[in-house]
Length: 308
Ligand SMILES: Nc1nc2c(c(=O)[nH]1)N[C@H]1C(S)=C(S)[C@@H](COP(=O)(O)O)O[C@H]1N2
Ligand SMILES: [Mo]
Image (cartoon, rainbow, N blue to C red; front, side, top):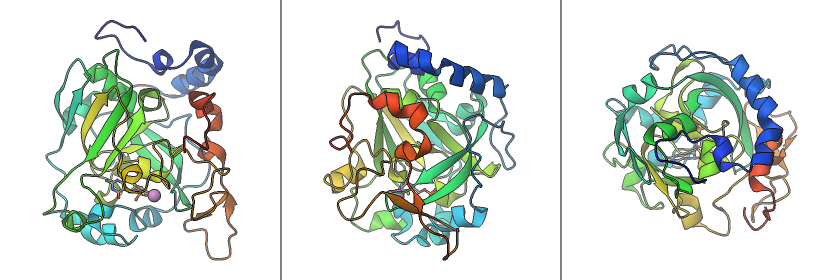
């Protein structure tokens, strides 16, 4: 990991070499399927298809935009769609700081003008044992972190949601120590599956889904995929994260989807696909939410029961 400042950091730089070589063909195949960049994300986003997309059938736009967890707008699944229209998402900027070469406030338009937007159809698994398939539009977080220039000593990435209680009624109530915070290990953040989403179904991200920019980490429980991000900090120690701080025995820092490690209060072996209908059976939950081939190497040698 010894690098000169300003050098682009790739997933391979934070991944043991042998593991990277095993995956080169996957990466090469994906790269070939992609192409050139797209313009800023305005309504009707031009986004290229991705080899990382699942071929599972996506949920309907209605399911994805009316059954939400966004506690800034209330605790019920139907609260975000009722209240999130209050949120002002333009202008928007993301403050990138900590162990980076080029700290500063990055405007959303400027961020979008310098990335490649892709459609990524991902499986999405909430820790509450429901799931969806969501056609996100977004770009690899790695490209943004490289733009800011990650310093050699950085090991984690911390994220914060907007704190604006006058537009977010849930923030006027207690329960959570706002703002909502999340974090990733640097190698997780640099992984090509990790994206910043700015749209879904080829349109701008609806407010209830985390407009205008949110994280999506498809192999982890949904609470890691923090919404409406205003701050990204590179750090050398594990950052405080909202759910772990609230209930450390139930929610860990890693939160990798794992059917073999139950939540203390319910099984994680199966899941309910939202919208599948009341006669559809539960589906088996897949290790790393079906992304095991791509991400298992990030955790080789780790006890996944201890690091839940
Ligand atoms: N800021 C913020 N981000 C958040 C949450 C939240 O309450 N606040 N909920 C998380 C949880 S628990 C889930 S399951 C997903 C839900 O994303 P969706 O509503 O777009 O499906 O967002 C995650 N990101
Ligand atoms: Mo969740």
